[in-house]
Image (cartoon, rainbow, N blue to C red; front, top):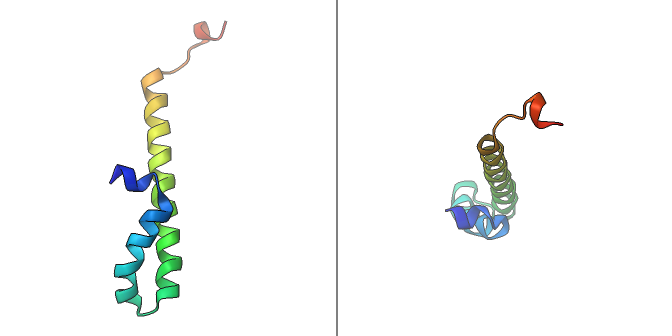
Amino acid sequence: MKQLLNRPFLLALILSLPLWVVFGNYVVALIAALLLSFLLSMYNSLRILNRRKADEGPAGPEDTE
């Protein structure tokens, strides 16, 4: 799943097939899948960035000199 979150367009193509069944219209399903996949990819990127910041620890006044 991590590999798919790094490739939002591929995830959108995969998600568009079940959404096509749900919505009954492929254009609407593709638009919804693109939106959902890019939001999931953005969430994954922000989670990784926050994890890296937490690993570095807070910068105190003694670290800024």
